[in-house]
Length: 244
Ligand SMILES: [Fe+2]
Image 1 (cartoon, protein in one colour):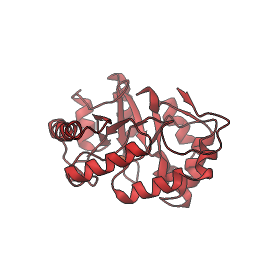
Image 2 (cartoon, helix red, strand yellow):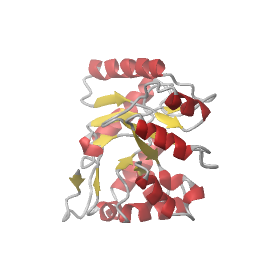
Image 3 (cartoon, helix red, strand yellow):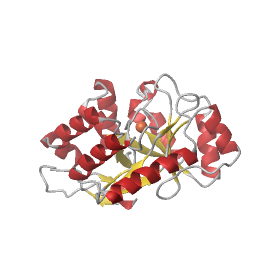
Image 4 (spheres, helix red, strand yellow):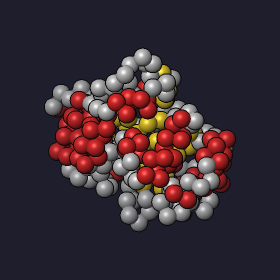
């Protein structure tokens, strides 16, 4: 567990996190990087920002992004080979961002192997329109199977904003929480920003992720990270990123 250096007044990069564990950098699998060249240019810039390791988490969403484990592993191999060929000193790993939908429930029920990172962490997300109907059952089944569910960007689920105690409940049920860096700068709107700050101040956030899809995200992150506001937000915080 890393503590941000308390007396530092300004963050110049993201090397204090060292590892990003939520990104859409594998080529042509989802609404993230569209090609191998696109992946490489995003990765080079993330490296410049201070990341040493990037865990790639393409969407797995039935009927929209039907990414199988094999498909993800193939895209990973392609990208990893190209990084090595170009001598780009960034480690990458492959996991997934699983939408908690009917097919994911089935995968968990059937005990099919899931793509994980760190200590059997599984990144899961829900629709922005409404919570997955069986979310608590899925969390329970994941825990029974030995996984640790990591809730992707909980601050972005508007339906929990007026029920803040549910965030505590998710943690009590054994979930870890992953905040999107961009939520803190208001990229997804004022309400999301407010909840993001609350979660951060209450020290409920376990991971910070870029959830990087494209250049616009990267430009916004670069701009935000250079501010004293970001430095102030990160003061006295600690995350699990650099344990990965
Ligand atoms: Fe994502």
